[in-house]
Amino acid sequence: MERLHSMNVHRYIDLPFEVQWPDDDLFTFDSDNKAFQNVIFKDNEWKPGNQKLIDFLDNAGIGIIHVESFFTHRQHHGALHTDYSWLSNHTKLNISRGGKDSGIEWYTSTNPVNVPPIPADQTQKLKDHILTASMKTCTKIGSATTHKPSLCNVGQLHRTYNHSDEDRHTLCFVLTYKNTPKVLDFDDAIELLKEHIE
Image (cartoon, rainbow, N blue to C red):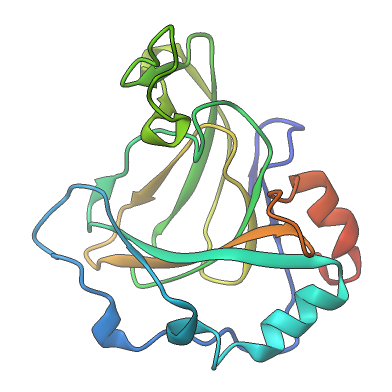
């Protein structure tokens, strides 16, 4: 990983087993479309092959609330965003395939903005929005490839990149504190999994 700032945004994790990808026919991406595309998996599409991962995280006090995959087109950058409508430090376990010269870049910004803007009366739910920023206001703080299992801070501004001639798929496990819906803080993820952090 490129180290540009002390902020924790990425760590490799040494899993004692292979993460199993859902069936290929579930990855219904349009490879000619550069727009953001993701697929959300049902439990029966990812759990049966990943009991070792579920047990491994459970033993560390960690749950999985949501599993998805997203697509980064060859020779393309994804949009800069956070996974919520505000800055946070919540964690995903990511692993990618395809696009060997690809990964994630993290940034800070002097002027992050909600898209679309959140109304004053907050009549729209926060999940209907993302936090983004003009690249002109940003400073890069790190980058990493995720072709091996990675803890990623997706509560900070980040974007994917793919400089290769091959499309990139990323499998994402959204982590929580065990038996709660609360997303897992990145620093806590490192502490809970410290024996397996590279």
